[in-house]
Structures are given as C-alpha cells and as structure tokens.
Image (cartoon, rainbow, N blue to C red):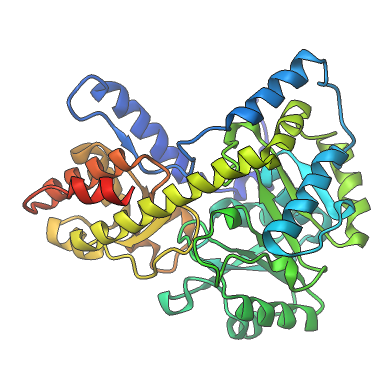
Length: 410
C-alpha cells in the first residue's frame, strides 16, 4: 500500500539549487585532495559566521538555563532591539508590537501567506525571483503568477506591469529588494507607485527584505516600511547578521495583523529558537554592528572586483547588483562559444571541468532563465580569484586573474 501524496505537495517543484549542491558536494569529496578542490559559488551563505558577542550570548543563555519557550512573537528584548535598529539604520519608526520573531524568514513568509492568501488567490512575483517565495504562496493554496521582467527594469516588477497583470483573483504582490538571484533593488519611488496600485486594488504588498542590510547604494538601501505601515516586510538574521543555521527571522506587520500572526505562530511553531533569540540580542551591540559593517564593506569589495571579471569572460552581468552577494550573469555567448546548450548544462560543465559550483537559472523562473547563471560572491576573495582563473582556462582565454588587483580591492 502506497501513501497518497497531497496535490499541494505535488505542486512544489524540487529546489534545484540544492540538487546542484548535492552533486557538487559528491564531486568535492572526490577532488578534495587534488590541486583543484571544489569552489562553491552556488549557495547564498556568508562565509562569515556569527561574531564573538553573539556566540558568547548563546553560550550564556545555555549556561544560565534560558532555554525554555518564549512567547510566540518572540523575546520582548529582541523585538525592542529590532525596533531601535530600524530607527537608527533606516530612520523608520517600527514599534516592537508590530514585530514577530520567526524561525527564519521562511517561517515569516509561511505565516504571512497563511494569514492572507485564500485558496485560488493569485500573487504577482517578478520573473526571475527566489523559487521558495512562490512555493510559500502555493503551500497556502494560492497561485504564484510570475511576471517577466527585463534588465531595463532591474529585473523587478514595475507599477505599470502590476497594473497590467492584475486580475480578478489577484491578492497582491510578493517582492524582494534586494533580490535573489539578481542582487538588484526596487527604486523607492517605483516601490511607492507599486504599493499605490496594490492599495487602490485592495491588495497586499509583501516584501522580502532579507538582504536589505547588505545594500551598497544609498539610493536603494531604504526599507519599504518607510512608505506605509500597511506594508508587510520579512527579514532574517541569516544574511547581514551571518546567522544562517540559527534559523531566526522576523516579520513586520500592520497592527491589525499582529494578533493573527501570533495565533498562527502559537499553533504552528510555538516560538523560534530561544537560544538563537538570546544570541541575536547581541547582534545590536556596538561591537557587533561595527563588525557587520566591516563585513558589508568586504562583500562590496568582492562584488566590485568579481563583476568586471565575469564581463571579461563573456559572462555579462546586465545589471550591477546594488545589494546582497549575487551576480546574475548571461552565459549564452560563452555557451555558444563552447558548444553548450544552456545554463543548466553550463553549470554542470563548469562543475565538472573547472570544479566550480554555480547555480543555473532554472530555479528562478522561466523568463530567459535558461541563459542565466547565478554566482554567489559570499565566498572569500581568494576563492573568487581562483574561480575566475579556472573559468578563464575553461574558456580558453590566456592569462590569470590579476591577483594584485584582487588583493588591493579587498
């Protein structure tokens, strides 16, 4: 007798980023002791880990027995620290009562979708976009509608496209700024226009801001929460705060939605990890913030060095990322030169021939994603430099990356 799998589960596609990661890890074991071990530029995980004050706070919580359940919305102290961070960093007043601590941004998105999406509702997302975001909509029995975007639009939705695509079943938009996979943000003025369209239609503006702390351009590095207190913003301690495996995030919601999120969280999760919450309070100590800002500058330096190198290889990055740690590169010219059929095969060839793991565009939508690959620049400058050298060799280009330039930029 076989189990009957729900249609909801069947609708969730494989996460091909992780499938590539498994293949790369298997090959990495084979080549670990060679002169060309695997370089991982496929996963969006900082090579930095939580700074000392955060680790010390976690150890202190365990030592003192501060490990029991918190309230469903999280530690009051942590919510107050986040409220203060919004005020200091972004000049936005976000009362702690509107902040819910969650088990990563994933739980925040799941709670928001369950609270707001009815069966059959449609939610507009840009194409390309992070695949799990559309699956959160699907898990709530909604339908994610991917709207093709262009480089001229920074691979983001525009107010005009939201207006043109809106239908009878449309519930709202799910945006990401900065975005995964492109590292591009929505200009604040355009974001305001999008929200005006959504509000006029009686819809919901939900935005993923997990890379907002890793913004490199003042023109874009602003929270959508400055526009309206009806916008719902999801964030995370994983990226800027370097706490990926701690599984801690948060969501900022309108006052009317806070008790709904609390009720759902009580039943589905009870609370986020207590130890992680106590540790995260230390993220906002001056010493921790200073370290995070130093690391942000290093991520920017990696971007500034790596993007021109890709362009020189024929892997054109049509929009320079203004945040996060990704490069969305068009591999079609290099594929044609090497006789490779598209980004999926290109990623596998790069993995096998150069021992560099990258992510094909397949996960991120259908709008020309077959010609794009995503590089993660969350790895060290030394790894980025070596990866470029191997790609140059694979492409049959002379010379190596300019090591001196890489070191100077770092």
